[in-house]
Image 1 (cartoon, rainbow, N blue to C red):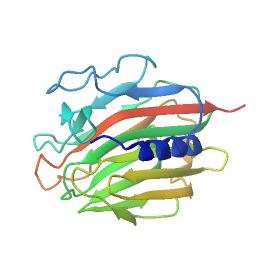
Image 2 (image 1 turned 90 degrees about the horizontal axis):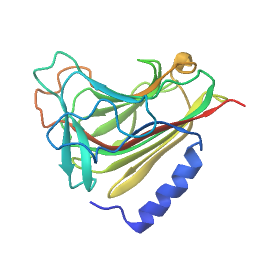
Image 3 (image 1 turned 120 degrees about the horizontal axis):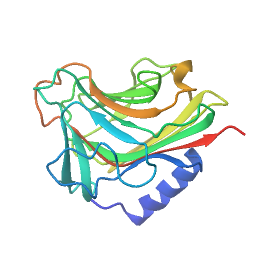
Length: 231
């Protein structure tokens, strides 16, 4: 499914509003990967030190929804822990602003306990989003599983996230094909230890077995992170 020119223009405006202009610390779009294989743990091109990590349930697919190759992370019932993450290149602890962007979609609405976590190191979260039975729940410094909207199977989503060290806040826009955008601004981050890490991650995991059905996956495309240092 291709993005309309109007939506593309909106995304450009939102990106300029939410994001910094600093250097990339992670980039992966999966176009160079072989369909049916796990993705290369070291994405080609700059930056050189970024990584894709996971113990199982990762495969490259041809996706009509995002109109390109993409990476599928699914609930592998043979896995003891269903966990993967995109990890930035190592960086100095002086970063002042972080930006995450990616497109993707859930394959069904029967998820249970599937999370996306925006974190400094492991589990030093700015915030997380739970996918549960068609509803999105946000947890951050002010909310504990607060309902922020819904999702449908194979509905393309684009996440634009900006996190500001000066204010210890973040803003996020989630665009959804065929539905209104979800927009949150100046939200408090969850963990003060988010800052000062040497790497930042976008983490996806199933907290418990997600109904034992492997089709309950999430497909990622065009994942990037960038930073801006303190003056």
